Image: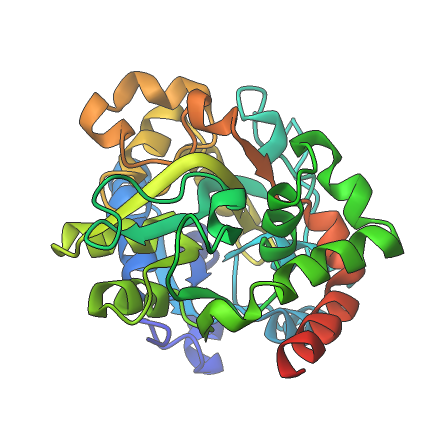
Length: 344
């Protein structure tokens, strides 16, 4: 999906009036069901309420943002991304700091906050398993996932290390509040890597797409997987015989950022203030099984929908937030070591 308006024709932009520009902003995300949910929950209602027209684009890769910022040719006002995106952008000075004067985030969950982006949703890495393979109950904790005697059968795991190393340390007995202190030492990193390697012979699929573990459980190719709660929930909604465990999880946060030099900055700030409001936060979970970033949103979410979401207070008590600063500092090293381990 490319820009819906002919923004690439510089002549058209030059001819548009300042007044018309003031009623527009350009939003770039990643397409698919995620962007469709954003359109339904936030873009369309915001436009209807404010009269600001939102033009959509896709693929806001950090490299593209960097090229636009450095050449002073920015087309986007708000872009989306996860923790690695925001930290890479911060390292290259691509995103505008979001101050309290710009957006009130006083009600946002503390673990989700970042100086350079407004948190928009929470999703989690959890265990999904086949109810058919484990009719009396499947693995609940990450230690269970690693226990091939108590819970036999092939597994599916991510082919990238993010959240897997954390799960490995939790499985190895590290307390939640010490995971990154341990992972931050050479010995602790190797401990996590060795724990993953100990399961290697029992992994049938090292997945690169979030749909793969869901399909693999559904087809019987594996009996359990580490994957994203939203993907597992989509499989459940489609009738697959999958169960998720919420006994332990690793939470990640999605963010909306304003690139430096955004042409419609004022409209972008209004949009971010809209998105972070509790009612708007609650609305997003109607379309995708991601949780709100503020506890106040639960007032607008019924019990049936709460059961599908990762960021209830009860579930966050048994979760750790992925430390995006640690991953920004160590992603290259961790990926190289992890890939080498998989190839052994």
